[in-house]
Image 1 (tube, rainbow, N blue to C red):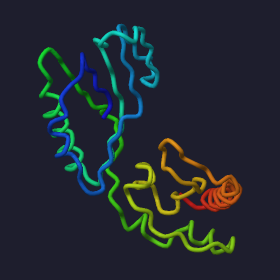
Image 2 (cartoon, rainbow, N blue to C red):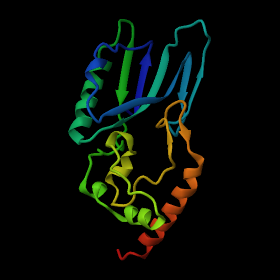
Image 3 (tube, one colour):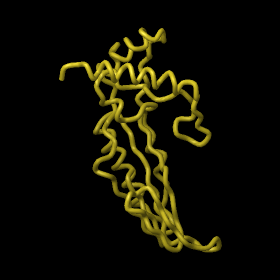
Image 4 (tube, rainbow, N blue to C red):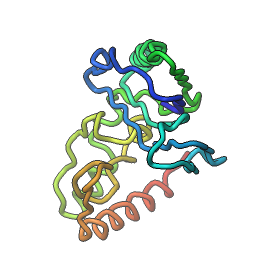
Length: 188
């Protein structure tokens, strides 16, 4: 979901039809007011207004991740149908960033006992289990074997209250350094 603009809101009567297995979507940036300007990077919103008005303009930017191209297209179509049901006196538009996240279906490559497993063994750490597609970042699902699960431990998955287990940063840095040095020696 790259960009959704709204003038005085839109209906969510069909939102219940969106959820599917292994599909995630969220809004991470919201702004609204009497005036509204999106920054050139698409990551900043500047708005003006008062607390006693109905904001005539609002914008929401979000993220859409799915297992297959078909699931992405199906979800986009459902979202477009919801946006088309604007409430009386309102108008909503939705657009999607063409670059968006790629589908993130599990592959044999990211299931395999790969280079990261050998680094774990050499460090005396347990083997890494397969990571659920809905919990991993999209780029890791399409990466070559061994280029996954290198972030720090913690909880909350990019949500309010997210925590990072600081001691895991040192372990992950060592794991990443060993893995990168091994990959650098490989023939291409």
